[in-house]
Amino acid sequence: MFSWCMLGALICLCLPQDITGRLHLAFRGLYKFTPSFGRSIAPLAAVAPTAVPAGQDDEQLRRYQQLEVENNQIENHLANVSAELAAEHDKVERLSEMRVRFPGLGGAGFVNADMIAGFKANDNRIVINRGEADGIRKGQYALSNNSVIGLVQETQSRTAVVKLVTDKDSSVAVEIAGSKAVRVMKGTGKGFARIGMVPNKKHVNKGDAVYTYKNPGLLDVPIIVGKVAECKPDDDNPLLWDITVKPVVKIEELSGITIVVMNPQK
Image (cartoon, rainbow, N blue to C red; front, side, top):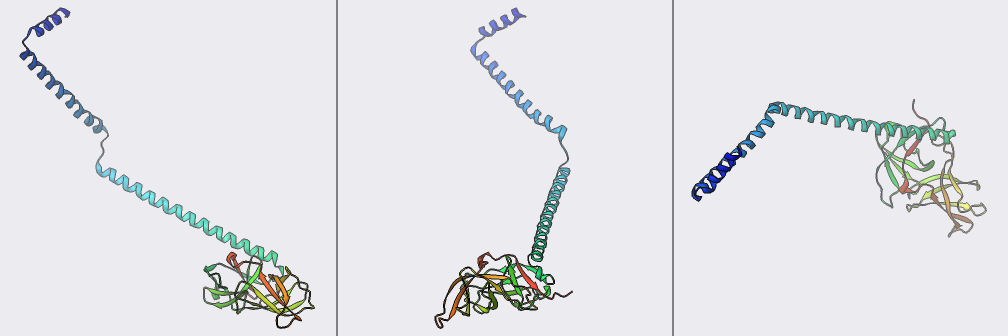
């Protein structure tokens, strides 16, 4: 075999150049055709065993997309239920705290509400998401952070307007701690309230607590409303005090409004 190969090689070396050139071109043509034929066969061999009908693929894709939509709907529903339960839990806790902190209001009802309208820096009225349908009436006291913040001014079926004690048209009967002086506190419209007509014989200091006076049928116990911010002689009558009261709850920090309903309907 080796001898025959050597003989063939010698014969090729002895052949003229034009003959060996044609043999070379023929070999290149055959080599070029063979790999291209192999490459065309390979993809067919790989795809043929796993090919499935196109309609079946489309049906599986549609089913997957439908299941994904249904799963998202269920997750959103669970998230909404969790948020609603958390809100109801907060309401129950707030009501329980009111019962504990104000035992004198044992027979009263409490309506929890939230503000539904913002207010500007000079506004002294807020709108809440509870109204006549919830037992709210004009004149009832509004609480926040365990203090009186105002009274119900207007009511609708599902909403109500609360006039804060700082409103310029607000008038609330109050008592200054330690002075036994029951007077009317009026709002200034500028974030404060004023108490007048207090004789300078009454001992009043800066920081003294100011409580709402009992108002039978609306509020049976005194509840803090503010603290004395300034106490000075009245400009018109030096024998009287001019007292400035600052609410214990800042207007911009109001949250969790509770309306006291002294005689709730069964």
